[in-house]
View 1 (cartoon, rainbow, N blue to C red):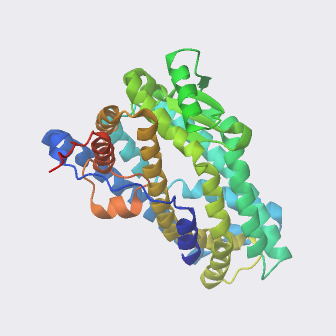
View 2: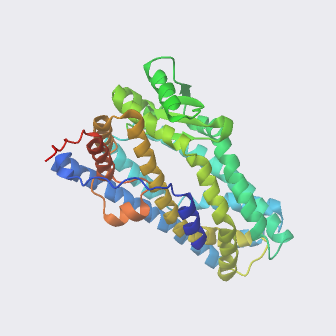
View 3: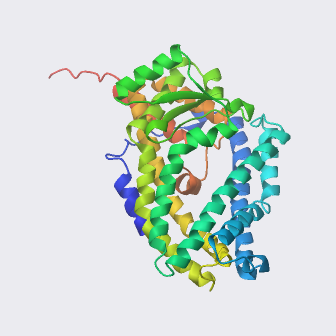
Amino acid sequence: MAAAELAARLLTPRPPAPAPDPVDLGSHFSPEEIERGARFARPQLKLALARGALDAGALAAIVYRRPRALRDLPASPAGGAVAAAGLGLALSLPSLPLAVVARRRAVAVGLITQSWRGWAVDLVKANAIQSAFAAGAGGAVVALTRRYPRSWWAPAAAGSVLFGAVFAAIAPVVLDPIFNDFTPLPEGETRADVLALAQDAGVKVGEVYAVDASRRTTAANAYVTGLGPTKRVVLFDTLLDRYNRDEVRVVVAHELAHVKGRDVPRGVVFSAIVAPATALAVQRLSWRLSDERGTPAALPALALAVGTVAAPIGLIGNRLSRALERRADELSLELTGAADAFVSFERTIALQNVADLDPPRWVSTILATHPPTTERIGAALRYARSRRPQPSTAAT
């Protein structure tokens, strides 16, 4: 956690974004809209937390019971690959009913457009990919722990950073197309706006794509992904179809701010700073959880240790993420000068995505990766106020 705190402090943009103006939630949203968001989002959060707790409990049970099937596997990379793939599949099952409940609630409010059959196909794809990665990781871990019984944490830390960087680079061109179709923005108003904003921001945008998000959801979003030659800005088709030109420009400028700030590489650097301490902590905790060493039977304890150590690090990472989002909002406003469009976009997307408009403070300050809607609206109001001409004072 000390390493994560150091990384977050080093990577947080300076100076911080200006404090937003206070916002009266009721002046932008009706009581019915506020109540609808809370009624949907808060149970969804509880379901997500329950799924995490159930997964952790299932993994702890495996560590405690030490299934014979794991103990019978050969103490080799092949045995580790089989064990890790099997664990990945087995641990996807206990929380599946809660995922079904969460999806049914999303369907009920109109967020989900995909059929249950389509969802099941996506689930199979995701589990197959997860199992393949788990098998590779399991085989590598068994090989490392057998080759370096006490110091394996050091090469494991280096390997995790390298894998994270490679994954960030290849995911947009190898994995993402498995689930969605990505189409380069055609020549036209939106593409011209993107190129003009990129020039104003002083960044090379790479490519800008529209993704067919509407095949699964009515929610709108945009994001930056990739490293180096795979760097790209992705806009949901639900965003392009519903929002006006000024609102889309606000979103594009926000994403270009992430490119300008090198926020994807910044995430890799965060991992690199945290990885050695994390790997050492995982090693020592896994030894407390199990006396197995260098065998497939040691993998459940390692997985539980990873989850236990990563959870508080993730909370610190969330704080860094919120700081990056605030900086991106500020640059978006500076590039576009469209405070009114920023406010209207934040209002519309919060309603479209059925967001919690007044989340509990602990959610906003611990779990959230983005500032709450009211804070982002307040940032736009502060920007607009700062740009108003100041009345001159007559000399006396």
